[in-house]
Each structure stands twice: as structure tokens, then as C-alpha cells.
Image 1 (spheres, rainbow, N blue to C red):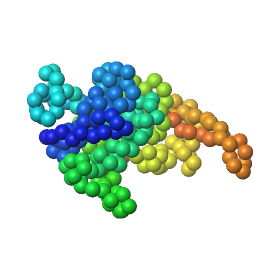
Image 2 (cartoon, rainbow, N blue to C red):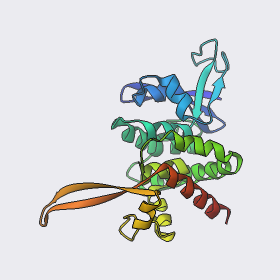
Image 3 (cartoon, rainbow, N blue to C red):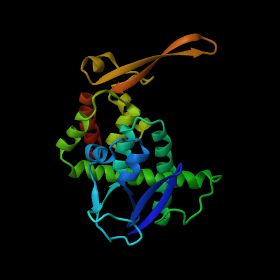
Length: 241
């Protein structure tokens, strides 16, 4: 277990390489994502925190009471809850640069990535996503349903499909395909009225100026807390099947 220091937009992000798996210093992530009370945010949103003991890593400055670290699943939970636009850039940085490189080399910066080699980049991303999905399946088997319920209760408003996908542990496009397969949304990813009436889905309407067709309206599908609980059950059944 060793320390891998990172810098994202001039902010220090400390990552612990634990048997090739990244664990992030929770305070660093929460502060970067704009939480006014980082400790409260970690307590409210993170599900798998661990305490790094004082002196466990000599090169890491650790207070006597220890240092809270979080796995990548909790990093994404903090990203989802963050209101800062910077959160999306941070997510891309973690997914496209940090995680693939750690998984491939066991540390950051040891192997050089050829960014002109699309096959190499795609391979690294696939390795990372497959590992995340594998961990998600394990969590779904071992974690009580009550824990998922608690996570949903924290969401006061409906969330986007992309945010729901992160919570469930899959990708946005894959979740949209699943929603189309189970007849929750249309071919155009718009919610069916019966799902809105059930309280599972909601919509966000917005207008935009089309270059040739003038003012048009777009429909964005949202999922409610009630819908997310039901969807999680259906998604779990799909994984078991």
C-alpha cells in the first residue's frame, strides 16, 4: 500500500494504491467538489469508508485519529451530489486517466499513455469499466436493500438517467437501453405517460432555438426516488438472470 499524489486543477488529490485498487482521501475529493462541510458530505453520501491508521503509510501525513479514505464507488457518489460544473471534468479525469492507469500499472504515471492510440485508450477504459461493473455486482449481492433505500431517501428531487446509472453501477447509454427494453421510455428516450402517473419518472422541458426550424422543445427524462428503488430491483433481477 503506497501513496500516489495527484494534482487536479492545482488541487491536491491523494490516492492510496491498495493492491492495485485506488482509494481516495475523502477530504480531498469533498473539498474539490465544493462541499462546505466535507466531513458531513462524506458521512451522508459515502457507503464504504475506511480509516487509514496513523503511521500506516509513512509518506502520507496522517492525523493521530486516522484518515478517512473512500473507494471509487464513493467518489462517484460525491460527484453525483455535487452542484459544481467542475464535477463533470473531475469525473472524466478520474475515469479516463486515473483509474485506467492505476489498473494497468499499479500506480499513476508509471506507464505512458499514447493519446493518439485510440485502441490503447479504449482498452484502458474497458478494463476500468469492467472492474467497476464487477464490484457493483458484488456490492448488490452483499449490501442489504435498506442501504440502497437510505441512499434514495437522500435525493429530494428527481435525478437524471445519467445520475441514476452511476448510483446503480452502469453507464448512461446502457441504462437507457434497459429502460427502452422494459418499456419505461420510448425509442426517443422520452418517458411513457403511465410511468409518470405511477410516480416512477418525471420530465424536464426546455426550449432551444433550432437553426432551421426555429424554437423547439426538448424533453429530458428524470427518475424519482420511488422509480429508482423499483429500477434497482429490476436491474438486480437482470444481473442475477
